[in-house]
Amino acid sequence: MKIPKLLLVEDDKTLGLSLKERLSKEGYKIILADTIFKAKIELEKFKPDLIILDVGLPDGNGFEFAKSLKNPPPFLFLTAMSTAEDRLKGFEIGAEEYIPKPFHLKELLLRLSHVLNAHKHVSESLESIYTFKNFNINFEKFEIQDNRGAIISLTARDSNLLKLLIEEKDKVVSRDLILDKLWGEENFPTNRTIDNAIVRLRQAFGKDGSKFIKSIRSVGYRWVGED
Image (tube, rainbow, N blue to C red):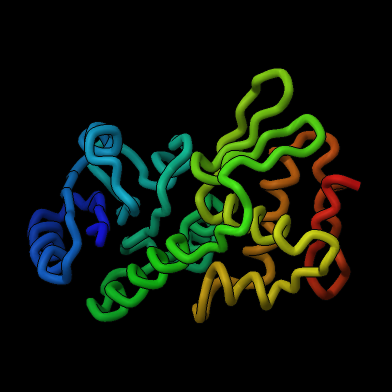
């Protein structure tokens, strides 16, 4: 069985070492980076399955770092920045979870498990590359390529949302179902969280994006990309 690899980006040395020790005991392989510079190096070298990311770091901002990543693995924020505005920003960037400090270790462990399982068990009924019209969607690399070779990177969760919509082609996928499958039982993500993800997906397809993903008022969304 594959051991999940985690990259912990945390500049508080005491907390970082303590978390690294505890997560290692829980069966994870974990690398600790205390700056964005080191995180970038470890991201390429270690190739983690998930990133646990602080926001306030010595050499930059965790939000901006996450936004700069191309084809990132799933990531969650673990930070003292805990206002509603901060959390919304985190989810809009594409975070799987947003856990404010101080936090309960058991909650972190449960949320880590949920995120990893959600990505592990996303339906495999589609091939890793899905082609329609002038686009190739690569669900393994989390990217969309058009016929000119231009590549748009997606977050892991946005990629999984797109996959879910395509698998349910011609069916209306409710926001409740999307939240249940991709976010699980969380208190904070709302319909706005999903709507923002849909906006990002439409933008990834350019001017025709709104034609490919239709809004069904008060219910959810429907994929009609091939019509």
